[in-house]
Length: 264
Ligand code: 6GU
Image 1 (tube, rainbow, N blue to C red):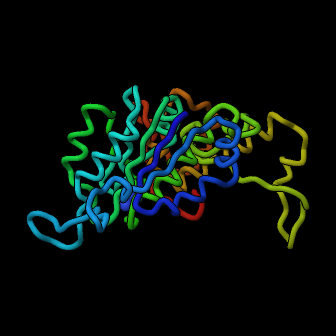
Image 2: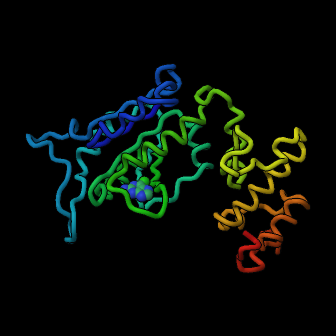
Image 3: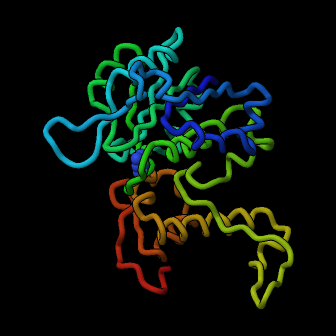
């Protein structure tokens, strides 16, 4: 996969030299280049921003440096252009899987109040433009979001994560949060590892972990439960969910009681 990142703070992306992503680049699995937007300016001061039309606080990124930068990285095909923004659609694990299938992704890191909207309009001719957000909070620029999205996407590329099985049993892979994990010692500061995990009974262990996933998702992320297809739930699932205050109504999980200590 090829990835180009355009930013006025290329140093922010230095973390992409490290760990699994750094290794993937060294191994030739990921061809990632970071570009400085200021290299695509043509004035003496390398200006990338200006005041907003219509007034208001802050500065807006000028269109021409962005057009020059995007033309320079566009290449032959029709890349995905991800524009990180708190005004984007929320980036999900399902999107990470889809994006991991792409040949070429370009990230355009905005700063200040954002990039002149005409850049996104103009780019539609040669890019598949996607404004994407990490979630409902505001960062100062797209760089930290790019670190998160590149890591989420690149770890799904074949050969990047050593044991591909670790991609299967993780949060969001089946619409549920991951179960809690434990390691030695089995008793630590008066706290015991759940006995079933020491039992060697693999069916009981799988059931216990599934129960914990359902309980934890009900408690922490009820919004995810309501997205589940009830047809994928077995009787044991439904019993755990009933305890957590959920029942199936019209093929969807629905909250039947207010959460209490007991249902937590
Ligand atoms: Cl992608 N960008 C910025 N600037 N803020 C954010 C974000 C992205 N996602 C959440 N907050």
